[in-house]
Image (tube, rainbow, N blue to C red):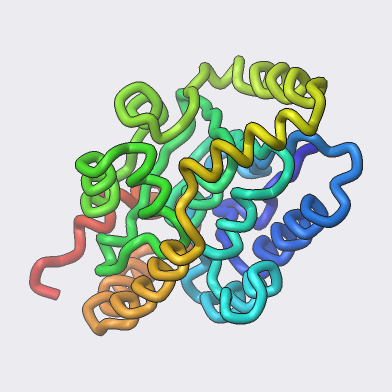
Length: 265
């Protein structure tokens, strides 16, 4: 099964996209039918998902709460639920996956990417915040302490080769021409196995490696404080004036842009 993100060129994680993902997750929990593997990809060639829609945080948070339930009104808790759906999930990434877009990809069981086109990053520290939807938890477990701090506090972009070969951020970076065929072969292979064994293996690995709900909730709460500080608002307003959330040079090079905040501002 394919679930294709199609929310404009940037594929911002906003109200409509969260609503559709919540419906997908609910279906996978309650009535997956014959679905054994879900591949999440993007209709945009340049962006898997640029990041969350920073103009609609309360609205998409309300949509996310429909998956997490009362008291779990955060995208992080929704992605925590996505990470534990009873089918295999694969993120097939072409283009940029930053912020909430990267957190969405990391909530999947596996990530395979285009070597030439994929870019990953958590840019939040460049605005005075921190990843609030699972980025801290996933990166600390995948990259180890020192590299996770580099990725999060450095707020820079990582190309697919670096993310794969040096950091363990993703499963594999493949030549773009080979990506579709590789993912198709793997999904067909897994879908042909007895589902009970696959699900048991997933549960065992998840229990060993995924963050607890309490840790994800803590990150979501921590995120709310710095993002509301005047300095963070000033930086976000500056970036918005330079082209944040609009297709163009700033979004293409966001890792660079967050470090170019005028020092006298």
